[in-house]
Image 1 (spheres, rainbow, N blue to C red):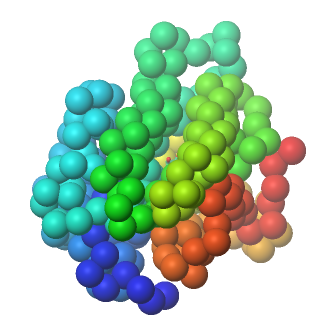
Image 2: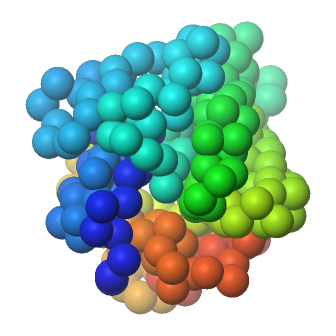
Length: 243
Ligand code: NAD
């Protein structure tokens, strides 16, 4: 991968499984990175912007804060996300507000604030949706809906802002070996290592994704190699399509 030297990037969910790998890889390629998450103290980065994405004013202010700290803003990765499980009848008001707030409202707010800042020189926004946003899986109604909303928002923004030289795309992973997946297994009483191995047998490639498998595609979409891609939903699934 080339072309990131001196580029300025904002990554949300930077302390998580996929986010931390995106930050590491962008920095290894020479980018300056602002990390956003609830806790960012231990993360190596050029700027640290801790906060809760459910706080609208924090999300609204993130792109401007990244630009001020880094001296520019070329790339935004809307990666932060939460998963709530259950059918609609098992979904609480808190689940609804949390899922919509982090998975939909925050990328909306961050993108809305970033686009005018990028409009002069152009840039790239990469959203982390899910294959469950393309075709839903069972028992995760609100999570699937939020990822479908983010996928649709990506397609709309990809169309609407291409003329400003801003490319907006999404990566849609299937299962990834991160804390999100592993804590879910642990909560349901499974050993995460065993469960990850078992789940890997259901994937045609023979294993679930590691964070780097997804981060590579995020960097591709953020790079000039994807210069003609706008509003694309890129499924990264090891051959295991849902539905
Ligand atoms: P993760 O739980 O390791 O990371 C998510 C990060 O988002 C965490 O660091 C968390 O602190 C941050 N975050 C959550 N709520 C926040 C809030 N209110 N304010 C600020 N930060 C907040 O999970 P991950 O697997 O690395 O997930 C990254 C993205 O990938 C998510 O959008 C997720 O939905 C998506 N995804 C994951 C999988 C998977 O199997 N792991 C599959 C498809 C899509």
